[in-house]
Length: 296
Image 1 (cartoon, one colour):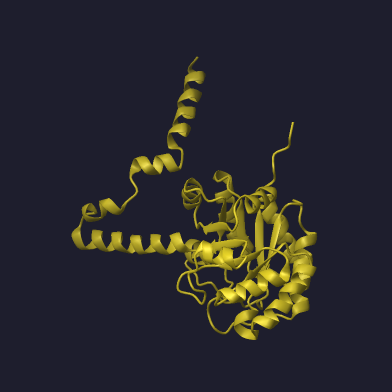
Image 2 (cartoon, one colour):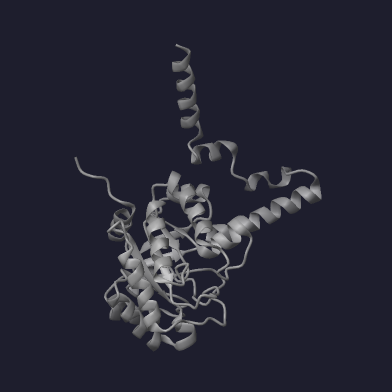
């Protein structure tokens, strides 16, 4: 009997099946199920999404490993699509901290993570004022993460924020060192044109991730445009989160203004649609069966 694939192996299989692999962000387990139903082969949990969505904090490295693991567990408990997790700078500062982070992700069912080269007091990747650590410090972070993998298939992506502060040449030099240290792929944050992605993909020899986040430094390139540049993964970290927030604002404002939600019913997911998403009726049927057996 063939053993089931590990989450990391399923992520690697998705990379083979879809090129480039679209990875869409989900800040809740419910959104992860919706993304899976839409056909996405991999899901993403953003550190900024944990901070803003689960905690109401800005993306400034305030959330902890336990905050992230709580959302990881909620998603992996119900969603089969492999989950890529943002671990910021690894929840360091030491190699032991980073190792604990990676081992915990594997235990909680994550398939992959990305770790970045910003200083500990990190900022959003599309904000000014970012500081990056020395190349060797980031290399050490990667080595600690690689050594800690208890799922051999667990996929490790090295993110560099050096494009904004040091330029593309330096970012490429650093990324090459990260690959040598064992990173499976490179996340070129805040790249500003397709030629930059082409330089990364033609130089590094590993998959390159493009972060196509709204209202940031990177244009909203299409999948076909990114494929032409050799990009291996396309990330949409907070698209649904932003849309859901805008919808929530509209619903709250309408109820407050009108004293009723009638005017926004057409924009809502119905009860039947929610039940289908979370497989409500299957749970109810199992509950009925359980009580029927108990009554005999």
